[in-house]
Length: 260
Image 1 (tube, helix red, strand yellow):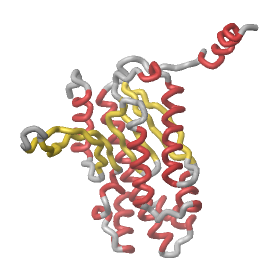
Image 2 (tube, one colour):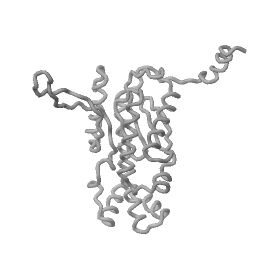
Image 3 (cartoon, one colour):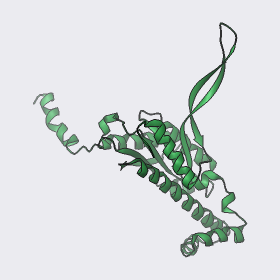
Image 4 (cartoon, helix red, strand yellow):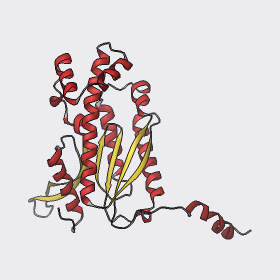
């Protein structure tokens, strides 16, 4: 059998079930670390509950994903997860889900492993959102998840570091309300949750910003100001309604037809 005939015959088994994202649907890629609890606490022994070294590796991995061939207009990271908002009109790989899932997971795993010096693997899924309002809700959801995770993590590790057994600490926290967890941190450990670094409670965002760069006209010697773009890592994201407006502005900036 000639190669062309064999190729056509076999290729269908690889592509017959290709799923593509419909036009005008927003895509948010959610990339999660695989087995990162063991990786960060046992293998690498990062500081608990948060370690700036790990934060910076996640920021660098997010930045890499925003510059590896996909039209990402906003990146968000908290804990061991990354969310990437792609331009609504992306036609990369003809919007094939298997391409987005496999390549983004592979790029994240490769970049993070190089930074860490050990193997760190990620998986990826694509959230398909039909309206800009749902895009805003998605990022509000992930930020709220970051807030809850941070509160639980600080409570849990405060208990553990005070000598409480892991199972006992988890059991104790499962019975507490949000207000009671705040009180536990403050009364028992002297920690005001509101005073903790914003990136721990809200996550971090990456997006393009415009800035002025000073230069010199080589012919006249005059000082010149030119506008340049750069990727900003924001460790002080706004909250709730302000964060919703922040995401809205990013959507409007990149999509001329969107109005809220």
